[in-house]
Length: 138
Image 1 (cartoon, rainbow, N blue to C red):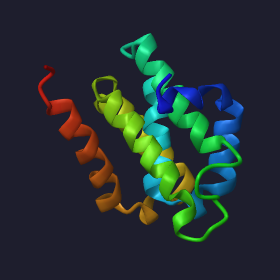
Image 2 (image 1 turned 60 degrees about the vertical axis):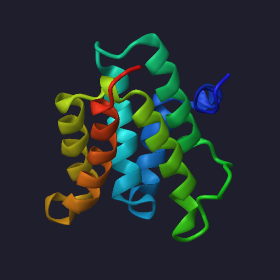
Image 3 (image 1 turned 90 degrees about the vertical axis):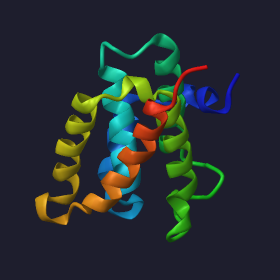
Image 4 (image 1 turned 135 degrees about the vertical axis):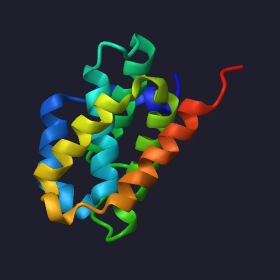
């Protein structure tokens, strides 16, 4: 069982939204956006069962109360969460289309407000996903 998938048993939709609502500001826009991208990819009819398992694992890790670097540690606390979310996102990059990204961006505004969005951080995440999307399959 891959690392991304083993945390899937910890995922629940309610747990995901509770975690984001309570911790969005502390976690930061990169973490929240990455989580939202995975969440909306999970809802997409274009996402395979295999990709959904990877997404469940990434989101499960995010909401897990105990992880490698505790979320209570300032700055570094969500670094491991971001790493796991990005790993999952790059693994399922073909399931992340412009509709998924737009839904995530729209919801991000709900958490942070229109004027507070750091577009450069969102672009950075999108670029990492897009690089994987454009990599030829061997």
